[in-house]
Every structure is written in C-alpha cells, then in structure tokens.
Length: 166
Image 1 (cartoon, rainbow, N blue to C red):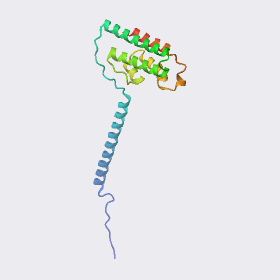
Image 2 (cartoon, rainbow, N blue to C red; image 1 turned 90 degrees about the vertical axis):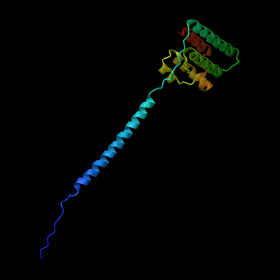
Image 3 (cartoon, one colour; image 1 turned 30 degrees about the horizontal axis):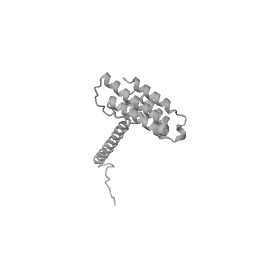
Image 4 (spheres, rainbow, N blue to C red; image 1 turned 180 degrees about the vertical axis):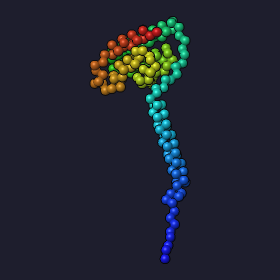
C-alpha cells in the first residue's frame, strides 16, 4: 500500500507574518523616536536660562544721580551701624546685599532680589555678580568662614559700583 502525503509549502502564510512584523516594528520605532524627542527637548529646556523680562525705566541723569546718592547714604549708614557694633557681620552683609539688589531693581527695573549668581550673570549686569560672590560666603556660611572678610572693604566696593553705575 502506497500512501502519499502532500506537504504544505514552508511559509505559505508568510505575507501576513511579514505584514504584522512591519507594523509592530514601525510602532516600536515611532515610540522610541517620540520618547527621544521628548527627552532631548526636556534637556534643552533645562539648559536654557530664562531671562525674566525687565520693565523699561526712563531715568534721566538727574534721577540716576539722586538714586546713587540715596543708596550711597544707605550703605554709609549701614557701615556706621556695623562700626558701632549695633549689628553683627552676617546681618550687615545680608543688609548690604539687600541694598545692592534694591539699587539694581530701582535703576534697571530688574528684580534681582531672588536671583542666583548664574541668573545675574545671564543678564550681563557688570560687577553685580562679583559683588554677589563676595557677599555670598559671609551672608550664608558659618561665622568662621566669614572672618577673613572685611566689611568696610566690601562697603567701599559696593559704593564704588554704585558711583560707577551709568
């Protein structure tokens, strides 16, 4: 007795298997590309330093002179309080930092009271970032780290920056 068996071709249904593989592959590639785009755009946004908008202030030379004189007087009064031991060094530096930031806000319209040094550097305000770096250690660090800082010199530098402001 002779029996014959007819075998099917090995990939008789290969066209739909290939179609499914192509569809799943394209979905996977699309998902990966979408994820990478989101990741890189989030990283790019973190790197960009946002510059807050400054309001336009029209100040005449007389107004700038008046503001300069006012803040130089405030710094001198602060220096007098420190010299008479009415305030401690840390508090004096905190008040000096606040005075300088108020001065910049009044003259430029940029509210730098809560800005970091990096944000101030992004604005390009000359010498303000240097003053802020000088005040940072005595303002926030332990008292031992601020012992080598001379408050009188710091006040003189601050008044020099105010006088040179244009």
